[in-house]
Image 1 (cartoon, rainbow, N blue to C red):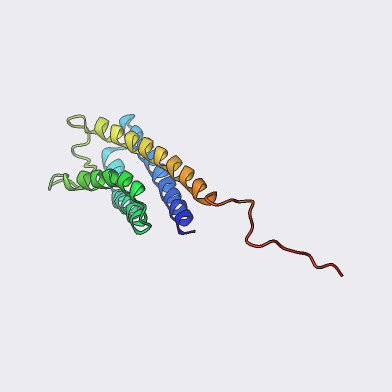
Image 2 (cartoon, rainbow, N blue to C red; image 1 turned 45 degrees about the horizontal axis):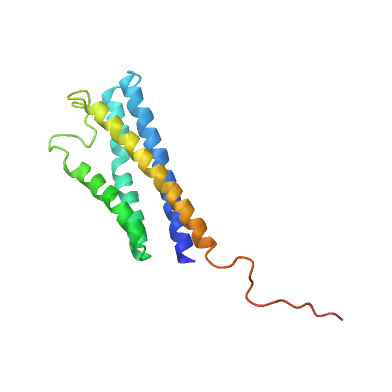
Length: 154
């Protein structure tokens, strides 16, 4: 039962992260087309950096508490990369997305590429969790009941 709850929780969190990545792609493409200015775009995207780290780390911890080593190892590179991305931000920047530098050195293209890769990763992860949740639900014989039920006739 715990396994089903674990996969269900991971699916919900991954679905939320998918919507967040689609929002990031839309926001970055709006900046690219000059529908948004750099300050507004970066403030919108920097707001969601910490929740993304928290959600990805929480998925990893939930799989660790379930002793699901395969899924924990599958999520470990994503957790490490998300934390590494945040740590490597230069000291003077306002966050992962800096309005003063987002148009320099192809950073906008790099952020767009990373958002698309994260979207693909979360999409694949979502279907992995769905598949393994269905397997966990069907682990036993679903047609077999615990005890036959007899109807007492009068």
